[in-house]
Length: 101
Image 1 (cartoon, rainbow, N blue to C red):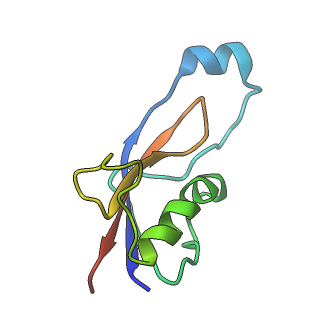
Image 2 (cartoon, rainbow, N blue to C red):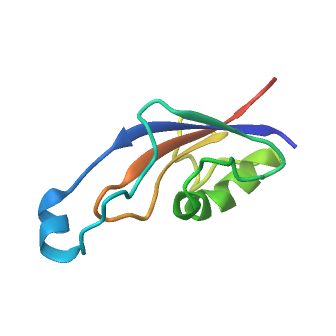
C-alpha cells in the first residue's frame, strides 16, 4: 500500500453562523495550518480529528491502493484530493496526496 500525506491547507471560521446556531464550545479543533500527517495502511493518525478522518477515509483508501483520478480529472495531480471536514462552522481543508518514501 502507498503512504498518503495529509496537509492542513486552510482553516475557516464562520462566527456569524456560530453566534446564530451553535451552542458555545470551549475547544472544537486541534488542527494547525500547515500541519501534516502520514497515513500508513489506512490507519488514522493519533491526533487526527475523527470527524475529518471519516470524511477523508474513502479517498485515503483509494489513494493508498494506487487509485485516484477522482471525478474524472478534478485534480491536476490525479493521485491527490482536496477535501474539507464536515464542520459547517469552522471547516478545515486538507490536501491528500500519495507519497513515495
